[in-house]
Image (cartoon, rainbow, N blue to C red; front, top):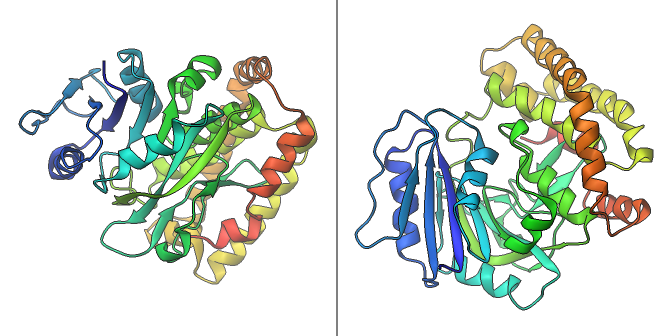
Length: 334
């Protein structure tokens, strides 16, 4: 039985996935196995020679979280690593993640230092959270060299995160209803409610081709990000914070309009990609409509999350404050 199962969902496969697998061949930590979940057309995945690879083909695109879950259910490993197919981990990546997690049983998650591929620019050093439930990569677009100190993080990006099996057994796997985006935020917050800690491991370095599959400014990405941030808040925010979500949402929308006028931020990038304000309004409307439809299920999941609670709402709120991002900074970020 391997110590670590690395779960890699893929939609496009091809050379990018092959480069990812080849980077795993160079890992200094060898006690691992890889499960590729092929959510795409079933294009064959070529395994490197003598490489511990299993390929699962669910037959359709079941989403990121469901694909990782499928790999977890077929594994008995002590640790689970989720890894995007458009990443190339440094040769010491897995060794350093395991070394950071194994000695401290309170650590249930580890975040990597993820860099934008071929640059010295940071993509993620963990996740930040906004008052409307939106999440953002910590340190994104800052010099990677400014993030070389390990320490506490709120939760890891699912792009390259390590999870303790015992934690997943307690709080559950990724919520498959999210389909794409923010499922890592939801899982991480559920774990924090249960008292688990997250460590940012600065010397566990991964290069990432950002939004390789979904596209940086696609309507699909905008739809799931806008809808799922509401789901994150409903499932995980304390009541006092949940009541403030509409106010923070309006504040973010106002700042996004300002950022669009300044030709900055993701919303401006969406418009530059050829989409209109009508498209934006439709995405927001549908996010609230879908949330209303799923509200009874979301409230049941909220109650289930609280059944594992080991910290008080005030402590959880302080945790969100410590790892927060303002509506303005979120709107003006890329």
